[in-house]
Length: 204
Image (cartoon, rainbow, N blue to C red; front, side):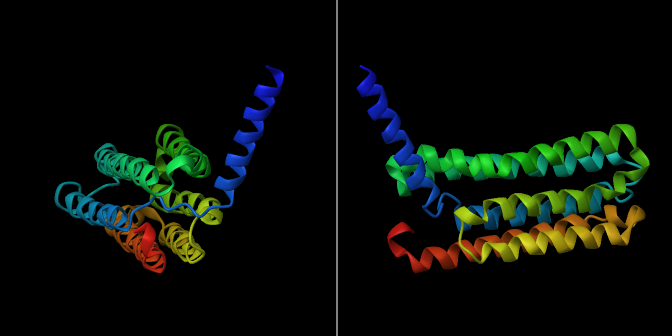
């Protein structure tokens, strides 16, 4: 029985090593392009209904947190089904590693939101920039499982996040301080994934 457990453990280690050496293709270009559209739509909603976000922070948070949750749910569902199809036997390990790479940035973004809004609300204007910087760190952390050009997307979010903080004050809560970075950034991610897929048509 001990030999059986040892053999199963060895197999599990081999699967993890194979997964860590395999490029993750669970993210679909069309889905990521859709999240870009969601970001732009959310910017229009904010512009129409929450023109003064500095005075209506709760409404601002509802718009963007709801958009983020919708994008995460859509990406997660598609990642699960696509990984099952492309990575087959390694899908569980691939999905687990993808989640582990991005989960810390999502947690950090949530904690930053809670701290800034509850303890230093006068600094809540920093949220768009901080969200983008944290998101960039999640992309950088995931780059070793993704196509190499993905580092460009991480750099884009890092630079736009820094630019939002540099703007400072209520202007940083403009709908386009979120709509443009995420609209363009997610299209960039989708384009990189699409190009990568075209290079491997058997995995399209």
